[in-house]
Image 1 (cartoon, helix red, strand yellow):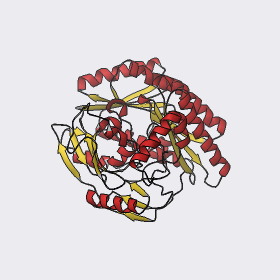
Image 2 (cartoon, rainbow, N blue to C red):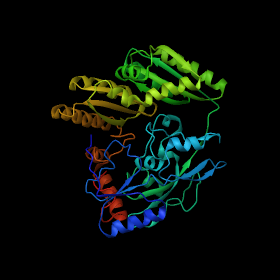
Image 3 (cartoon, helix red, strand yellow):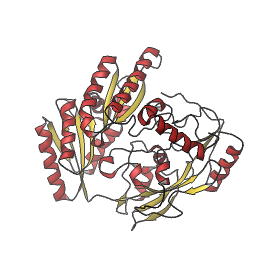
Image 4 (cartoon, rainbow, N blue to C red):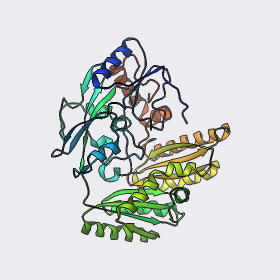
Length: 425
């Protein structure tokens, strides 16, 4: 929904030395700098609102170092998460953070990305060990020290954490040291439908309270399921549905599956089914990851707008039921889905680009949803980021002192305000 605002020039550096030279040249001349990974962000993070130079990092696509015994890898910004996992296929390790789109890993760092596996493996914030960052003036920073890839540290400020989620406003990430995980011995997927949104989300809460170590637990409402059935040739019930995935040994998986089925049936679930075969598992998750395109296909010619929030698990049933009612009250066509295992969900809204009144209702709904999440002690965005679209909600979330602290950090690292200007703050 954020209209394209192109830069004055695009440059494709081939290595970190060229990125450093570019940053110094642009900064010295007062030219805005816009870092670019794969452009899959949803809040206008790569729009050049003040013109300037877009530094496209896709040609820097090497996997620089793989430490199998230390469970870590160093990647350049052009490496995507699919490319990394393809490289790791025979190593016994994998990188589990999966935002759906084939995003660049350093872009995922910059936006604090998450995805379907976060309930078990965490988000990018928990899986970044070190960063190589070119600061606005061209200086090179290694946030945890050159070449270091330790799991824990009590040494000084957490500089790595400062750049995770900074959305290109503090520097250009030119390499990331990431934490890897053992690939699971076995995997099983389950789906189950429910008579209501409340029943589906109550099951999510009860599964987590019972300490069932679920790897993924995804919610898809009836609108999403109808769209996925049509787009991906599924034959699922058109009802609020949970997709679950479990990782472990064969014996452990059988116990986890049985416990999850008992909990969901206690909440009125029907059509509980499971699949161990890789082909069927891939088919189900491909349908889930294609939900955006499936929902768009419901109204050809319409544009999509996606927004997300995250709330404490205990408030999830309340906000999901309210959100469903808000969509009806506003007369909007929208789907609800999300990573409910960590309290994060998305709304995919369809809007006629030629209807300004409908566009106004969509934006009003998005702001209402963000404020509902804040009122329930949640956040206005679980993984999309702030970008252009949620700056006002960020102010309401962190307060005046929080915003002023962020502005001081920004002013210290980027005193001329040239790094991805107009975003976040």
